[in-house]
Length: 436
Image 1 (cartoon, rainbow, N blue to C red):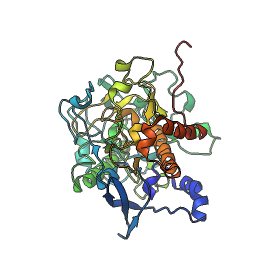
Image 2 (cartoon, rainbow, N blue to C red; image 1 turned 180 degrees about the vertical axis):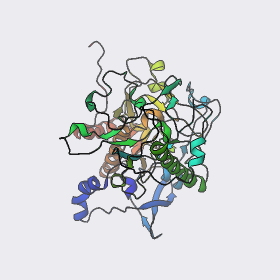
Image 3 (cartoon, one colour; image 1 turned 90 degrees about the vertical axis):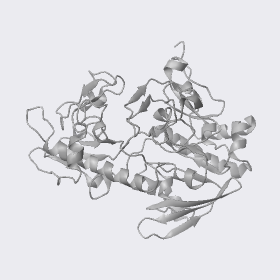
């Protein structure tokens, strides 16, 4: 299933799986999605997949089911207890949680795209159908139009100017050397640049390539989960229109530092995204359904203002580590950024173990986190760590004749599993550097 390999490109996927595919031990179904799941006696018995091109369906049975979907689709299909959106403050006593639960209050998503720039050329796209709406859209909490170079600073929420200079003629390694550590997102071209021509032989590339994942194309008007079947499709379609509108605005109306307007030399790169319109095949989703887990990571485990500067909760069943600020983007509930300090944290195995269902494991941002702590546990290295551990656990349990709940709760069983992770190079704790 392509869902089992999120964020891995086709070439790398083929490389990783070539041995097993050739041996006939692995079947990868691309362009499929899960549509139903059969559950009985706290066990997921089967998952049915639908071919997105033909509509044909395939039912798969397995000892363990790993949900690596972007929105935790199998949690809903399999009747696995889960949370969506923002929990009430009373549930976990998190200082930054709302007073009342807000299940449809979810972080915005972004449809990314790749851009290059060739001065003197004209790559202007046709005016997007929804450009009029997005050109005039101004959120209540925004300092100006969304399509503009003024946006809130994520930490202070004060208006902060962005700059946009394609292919700046300076050392790419020094582009932000004289700026504060949190200023990178204020220089939009270098931020998320994936190719800098200045780091290659002269003439090897005629332009940098930058990945456009900006405040300007974050979409938060409709939620992705919990609002029925039609709303998510509408949300994705509108998010794609927003990104196309941003591109068109950059090409035709964006203010230039030389006093002019528009960068018609900006060209979208469908060769990089693999789809004709040049946008990403799927949106970057920041918030998923989250399992009701044996362990729920809360703000009290990671927020530096609550735990102090020397580290958060040390979990007896740690299976990985992460480090990122609690970073929530504007949400479908009308919230502005929430960006607060956190400490290097651990991933507890209990956050990967459902309270009831015995053979489903989360493999991404669908672990036992809250709306608040999802802001730091949603980062890609953490997701990859979670996925790696989920796969290792799904292999370990049948071999040892145990279930995930036993591995998590029984010290000797956990220690045996932890030894396997250690052998495979999975870091489970941060070093204690106090006194150094």
